[in-house]
Length: 123
Image 1: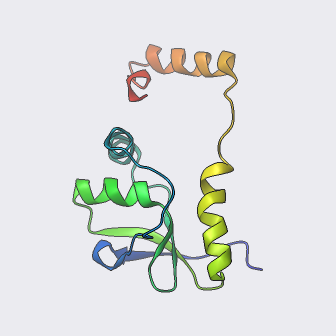
Image 2: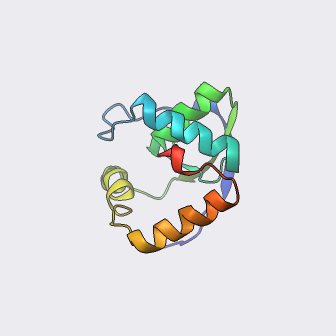
């Protein structure tokens, strides 16, 4: 199994959201994603299947559309079965959920505030 996959730019009109995506993306979250894209660029590519159906990145796609971005970095996974794509859609969202070390988080946020970076209001 390849651990690394090439990123390619794909026209946003060619991307097909998965119709049964179980993850909700309220407009409040999309606004945060838009803010992040404006500040840091589009740093996390979408994961798509061979037919350009989105496996991961539905929220980033919505944010990009609202920003008027025409091409997005994507990793095309032609090697995954439909079962693996279905499982990855859920795993991609669930595996990153964890608790914060609140003491360290507060220190980081305080340093950003000292640098006049209004990051606290992003949340």
